[in-house]
Length: 239
Length: 239
Image (tube, rainbow over all chains, first blue to last red; front, side):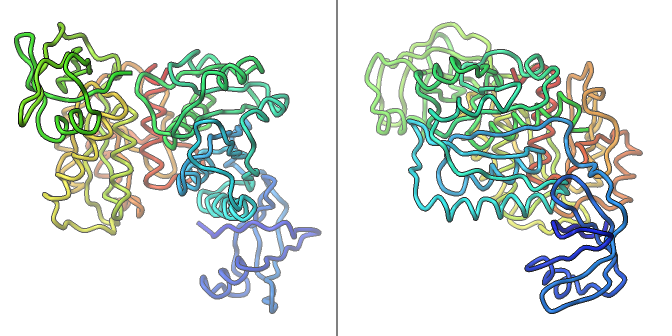
């Protein structure tokens, strides 16, 4: 399988690759003139790029007409996840990207152990984790990690989705019913501490539908992975 | 929710809890006489136990009649997983237990980076990881981690299952079709290095059915979690 790189510098039958990716292809992969790689514009279009020139800061390609990435799910799944302790969020992001999420948004809630700290720096790192995962698993887009919100700010985002699924202890409707006909889906899962009753009420009053994930208590980093896998399975995007 | 402990020392309306669990309940949880906990016999029967006496090495309970654990899935799922690098197997075991697997068996194959080393010690540790996860997520049984096999030894185990699902790159039948009517299911996923073509052939010739997990390339620790979540979702055990 040829290597894959994301670049937005694609136009008129040519493309260029910059920065770390150019370094990787030239010096780690030791690519030669005429070699082919897959170039992805991050918007689900892919191109076969043939190396035509190595410059100091970039690599130049001639590219074939773009074709749609086969790796993108038929549904747009956005994960909103309670901000967990250090390290776990990166695992959650990595798995969410592998399983086809288009975005991950952490949020602070009452029982979060984590508190906001250097979130701008952290967000840059989280987006690097997402980009690396996207390259490795062959995504056609670059899923984004958004800056953290407060739980109370989530309802303002619900209008972006035609289904808001709230995975809450004790359970609710089966996911298989809730996803029928869904296009843009928000998934909400909690941090280690779960949700306060008034937080659950706030989300439900704003239109989030409570969904069960079975009688076993899933860890905060297992729940989003399981929920996304089940969502993708039920919508035919895991086969 | 009352605390849960596994003990096999349950008979005639009484039970005893030993070792670390007894220490935890007495000295960490500071339980008092008359307090109630959930005792689970590890075979999917649970009991409400009321503390009747603290002894030096154990805690004694009177117990109500046993009731079936609600946490056990309707299918028996056994995971066979290519032996990954250090640490990842423990994550895989933890997630598999949370998602309802009854057993996890690592196996060595051609492209495994890991090589057999102190496997007896490691197996004891892996089973502690499984037991801890089982307690935390509320399982009714104690899932077991078996000593590692070689890939060539897997087919001898296929007779234990009425479905052997082989998650192999490139994909095959959709899981949703393959699980219909399944009772005892084996899931086979690879290590970081995947499978050699002759290994894949060996498994298929022995009756393993190739199953796809979608167009994205899942990491070796993501694939078993996603496969188990999808299996449990399709069989109604994740709602």
